[in-house]
Length: 207
Image (cartoon, rainbow, N blue to C red; front, side, top):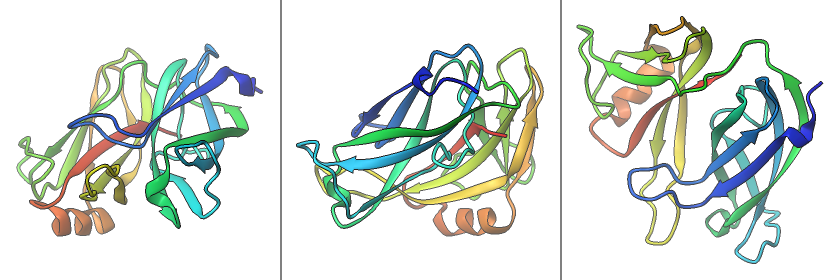
């Protein structure tokens, strides 16, 4: 079993214009890919716990869904409950750490929304599939999420208010690509939010 001390964390409340807020950097000094199960405590500006705030993740580092490579990865945090806008940091506990069944990317898999004809289109449009590309020289497995963000008040962080899986676990060949169809709940989410609020289409290593 990997050493839990192989992981260290850094929370970023604001990430700057055109970047996602509320992200957690996960650094892994183990030379192998690992699967964490993390627990979070929300902290205020004075680093006092906020017991009324529930912390959830988008990529699943809190439930064994995210695969973290040697080097670094990230997750996106979501806060709810009393004090959700007062979170300035998080305390992270590694509840469990397991060796991954498949190696995670060194370089991130990229996503490109496609229309019904297979042409590249904007993530803000009503797309029907997503092409994922693997830049590395070994196959990987990823999941894709369609994220919708709120419009925060001045000074507040922007938060993902909707997280809808696109397809299931997708195996992407070395230096290759795969196309994931947008169906079911994902198609309904794209139809509802296209040409509207801030959105993103993200792929992350999983198993």
